[in-house]
Structures are given as C-alpha cells and as structure tokens.
Length: 408
Image (cartoon, rainbow, N blue to C red; front, side, top):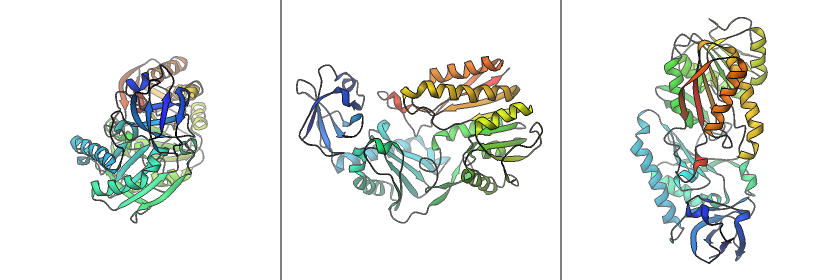
C-alpha cells in the first residue's frame, strides 16, 4: 500500500486522533497513490499511525479513515454507515421531523461525506477525494441500509475545487424529484434539491427555529438572511404580530412565500425592493429582496424598530485565516440589529463560520452591543442539532454557534 511518511514530531495530531494531515507535515510519499486512494500514514520511524484517503491537490493532504490496522473496503464503510444510522435512531429524531442528517462527515468518521434524508429521498454531498473515490459504493450501502431507492447528489460546493474535483449535481440513484415537502414540528417546508443551499435546507437550525416559534408571540419580527423562510414561518406559527423577511435571493423569497402558504398562516404580500414607512407594527408579512446590510441601515435611518430580530447570515469565514474580515461583518450586522431592537427585544444571532469560534463570536456580539449603546444580556447559547454531532477530537465540527440576547 502507498504510504505517507511524516516529518519527525508531526504525528502529535494523529496521536490525539485528529483526522487531518496537512501537506507541511509530510516528509515524503512512498509509491504513487491516486487521488482518493487509501494510504498508510507512517511516523518518521515507520510506525503505522492510521489509514487515510490521499488528496494530492489539497492542503489537507490526507483524511483519516481509521486509526487501527484494518482493511478499508466496502464492509468497512457498511459498518460506519450503519453506526451513524443507528445513532440517529437512538435519538428518536423522526418523531418530530422526516428530514434528518444521517452522515456528518468527520464527526461520523466518514470524512467528506454528508448525507441528509428528506422524506424518502437521500441527498448526498461528496466533498473530498476520498469520499469521491468511494461514492458509488457508499451510495449502494446507503440504499441497502435505509431501504430507500432515490439519491440526489449535491456535490457542487466550492470546496471540491480545492480537492481537484469537478462540481456535480443531479440524480445519483433512482429517480428522485428535484423538490420535496418535509415536515418539522408540525410545519411543512418545500425543499429544492436542485437550487437550494447546501443539500436544500438548513437542518442544523431545526431546534433554533422552534425556539423562535416559542418566543414570537405578539412580537414584530425581523428575519435577516431569511432564505426560504424557516424562521419566518416559525415566527408566524408562533403568533408574531408581523414579520419582515429579508434576503438577496428572489428565488429563495419566492419559495419562502410558498412555505407560508403551505402552512396556511396568512396571505402573502409581494416581494418589495424597499420597505414601507412605519414601525413595522401591524404590517403582517413583508418580503424584501435586497442586501441585508443596506436594508438594516435603511431601517435605522427610517427609525424602524422590532421586538425580535433573527440574524442567520451565510458563512463569512470558512477558515481561521479569514476570521478578522468576518468579524467586521458580524460586528456590523449585530450593531445595526441592536440599534433596531426595542427595549425588552430579543436578538437571535448566529454564525456558521468555522473560522469564528463561540468565544470570539460572543465577543463580537458584546462589542456590537457596546458600540450601539445597548445594554443586553445573553439568555441562551445555541448550536447545531444532535444529528450534526461533534467528535471530541474534531472541534472543527462545532461550526454553528448562536446567542439569544435580551436588550435591557
């Protein structure tokens, strides 16, 4: 088997069971492994440390499949998939929803593989050379383990370019439709597998959407970066007095409007390019297509205010190297949100940036409140749902963080 030999002293991360080896840790490559091929990871003394997939184009040159001396074959992946599915069964998630993450990459010991279940359809993302090499085998195993027939592929994330892989999206097994309707805590949502973000829906925010629903009663709500209306629908279902939903994508807003209708919450109003005058109270539901930063500044200048604001922006910092730039973006939107928040108002603020950890994010929100002249306190901390587990040795898996702040 081809082997990657580490430089002296560079085995420490593997001894701590971290699954990544960067190019700078390698002394040499023995053999001529193909992209995604399984290789031995050896210490400078020749000791076997792990078996991993090889990625010659990525700075993460190897991702560990196993830390023991065992074959990496179809049976190996069958065991890993079965273990991940059994965990989800143990969590009893399907009592409240028919949309669940089944495989969460490194945290389920399957680096680069994401699999979400939406009703009777699986949506698969293969993000690394290793998962790509085994994709067809994994697809067969997934159908065998779940008893389903249809898999839609959404391997079109930009990170594939770092692995030297082409972007792919479309039907992988069976004849899945491009769209499905899922149920979550009694609410229904359209999910578009072809055009939706990630695999179509943000399953990691499931519990946090429900928390918005629990606290929205009689509040004027502003939902920023609303996407297809997950938080908007929950706020309306929770009895919000009014909701203003803002996103830059007309397509996402159209699907959000469909989701409101699907749940028979109230009549929809057209998408607006700019906001109407007034405080937002009694306005019902308003969809605004626009840049959230610009809309927040416009609302500030107009003197508008809200009882609840949700900030769920896209990833500002995929890596720690981009954390400083991302911090400025998070600071800006949180500062504007505090200025728009009424006394006793609630701010749900989230970050899905892996390069910004929970401690830094809390500091950013605190600094924003200070600069906005707002006294506030944190009532709750949020993270991703239990179907997005975090391996103890892989803290990078804890990417979603959030706070619920009360303006005093």
